[in-house]
Image (cartoon, rainbow, N blue to C red; front, side, top):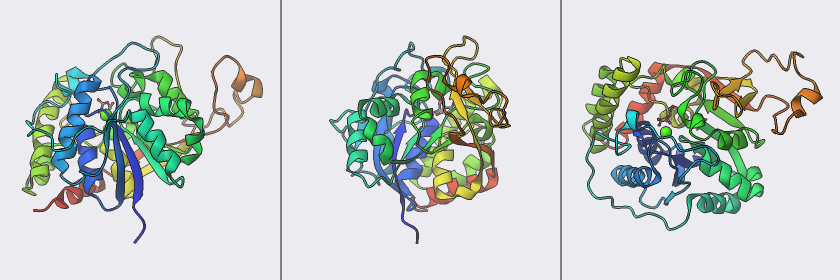
Length: 332
Ligand code: BDR
Ligand code: CA
């Protein structure tokens, strides 16, 4: 059997982050080293409380530190997603008081500590704004070489969800995303292009609920709230389960098709602020703008070659099988 992938899950729960936590906590293909929390879907107080609640509900990651991190984005004013995730950031279920207490370290310090002590075999899995990861990279640049890869949910090469151009996690801290996309480490980007294809329709929710364990019940309570909001705002027949695509890919890389391309974050535009500009057709590599002068002009560092593997398709049936099988590990 192959060794489990060691990960730090950096999240802003959030309904879909919560499912990612529940999956990462139980699946034997994943070794969860820490949960680091960032402000995003809601304020840091709320995302931290939600992370503690969900980690406690998983019951299986009691030895995994949960640390609270960046309270705000690095440059821009703060945006949250209370319209999508509710006033608490995780509206719908009610939780018993958490059995896990907050680790006293700042999430950025914890991330640096774990990476520094590692053999370079840690995968970062950010499912929220990239403020913690960017801050860690700037505070201790030597951690870059210790990051095996970054598997993140964020961005889109097609349409945005918070503006017509931008996806929430990138829009909520574009400058941090710029730091991450230029850090030189391998990046896998699960963008809206595929996460919109995995929607928790009523049959999916019923199938997981039928497992009858408390975590499956929590899944269905969360999805029922999420479904209502996503139907009202976007007209979806089921809520897109964005963040768990990262964990599903780590469990079974065959469920997502990736394509190498250059990804850059728009920091200067108004209409496109926070957009991930993805060179899907390799236009720059084909010679269009690929002069050294073009790549170095201006004050921003720019990647000279493809810097990410971007998800371009997902096998939705296989994804839902992975979710179902993972929740079945909590028992029937
Ligand atoms: C992302 O935004 C958040 O609302 C979700 O948790 C997800 O990480 C999708 O755009
Ligand atoms: Ca999230």
